[in-house]
Amino acid sequence: MNNSEWAESYFPIYTADSIQSLYSTSTMPIHKIHENLTVLLAVSSGQGTLHLDDHIYELADGMVILIPAKSDVVIQGNQMHPLHIYTLSISTQEQKRSRPVEAMVRSSVLAAGTYIEFYEPTIAAQLEQIYMHRLPGNEVRHMRNQILFHQVLMSLLERMEARYIASEQPSMERSIAFMENHFSEKITTEGLSEIAGVSRSHYSILFKQLTGFSPNEYLSRLRVHRAKELLIGSSASLREIGLKVGYKDEFYFSRRFKQQTGESPSSFTRRSPFQRVAVWCAPYASHLMLLGLEPAVVISESSEYVSTEGVSPPQTIRFIHSDSSSEQIKSALLDAHIELIIAANQHLDMNGLSSERLRSIAPIVEIAWMELGWKEHLRFIAQATQRVEQAEQWLADFEREEQQAREAIQTSQIVNETLTILVIKPDTLQIYGVRNVGYVMYQSLGLRPPAKIAQEIQRFGDQFHSVSIQLSELQDYEGTRMLVLVFPDEKGSKAHSEMIFNSEYWKGLEAVKRNRIYHLEQEEWIPYNPVSIRLQLGRAVSLWTGIQ
Image (tube, rainbow, N blue to C red; front, side, top):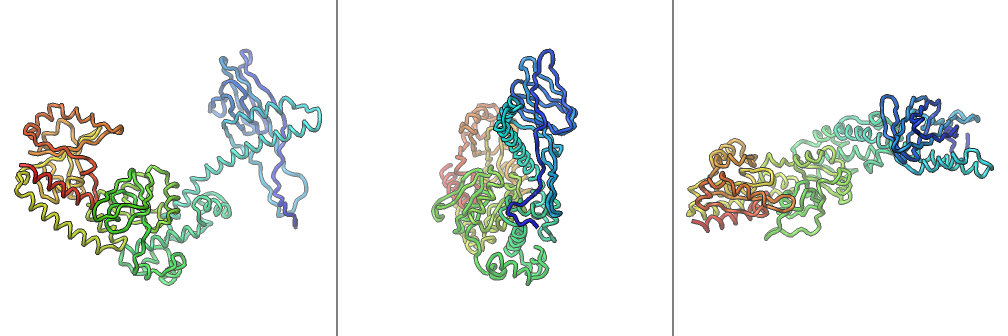
């Protein structure tokens, strides 16, 4: 047994077998390469093409290509930009000295038959030095050649290792995705490493690098976080929940739950567990703030929220743009010590994510965005954060305000007319239904939409957001009065609306002729959350009681 601290791993020995300098000229524009050794090709100057196995590769200054042994290569220069290349033949051989039986013998990476190309002008310069001193006059020059040669090898090996890691990443991701989707089943590191195509020991190292956790820690987090989701949103027994997340009985489940969280499952359900909550959908931030809980993180395209009387202004919210990479978002959530994620499934889908991919961070509650109305949003969020009483009290107060608002506009002519909500965007026209401003007008106040919109509301209820129309269809959705909202383009201009207002279709509307058009501001009437809806209700009463 070798007791030396220098562990012998018996990698192969690399030597420079030969080096050539090749020029393409008008009389010799083509060079052919067929070597029994691996060949390193570096372009010193000029342009050309390399033909290998029915593939054509463009050559340019600084290009470096590693050509597998016994490859048939044809290089053709460009007459306008004469090609100058260096080729270095690399020989590999195993160490011949005796070695213990248990010693690890490593095969040559450079001789593994891998084609690789990249841009690195330094290598061409190094090969030029080796070529110029290929017949060294003294041992010092010989050693400098050896150092240059191994610097070239180091660059190659580092490039190949980087590519190996990059190509290996998808396999690692597949194994992690498998765990995320099958965590309730029996999962072993051996099985995961087979999916990734790496050794068990190497797999654990890569897994920790990618996730920050060992495979066992990650699996435990997935199971316990899913158990928390079930404890929040279902009435299942501890035994049923334990089985659903992969534990054989409720006692083992409770023990593992307490090991990770510091409390038993029953203790978890008795307290208000979540103080650090992240929301993936800006309006849900307003729901939380209404319930007295400021989200720690908001992931959204904008930092839209509403701060008004009765709702404390945000103090420490961290906003993360939803365009950030999944790795950036997950890292930010971990750094913020998030205990619960509330997300709209539609927004997760838009970013190529899912509950499965986020569950390792924290329990996640998905609340459908378009399929539910804002009242249901509030109720689900209240249930998830154990603030049901606050939510129901607020909704009861709001319903009284709705009744008072309906009574307040009874003397207005609008109650006997029809109302169209037109939204003009840079690339489309929309007639709104019962979301956003439409909720207050049609649901809270009970005003009548045009017939076609009424039919859609009857069919889809709170899910009916809007219908896109052509300019020529405006008359089909005409009401006796019309609310108009113009969305600016990316530069902030609303000039695109002028085409609508100057058209004969617009001028032919009765509401236009009778001057019953009301222009509303997007910021005041579009946000769809409890606080905004309440504000819109007050604005709507002021609008309709102030007209004849």
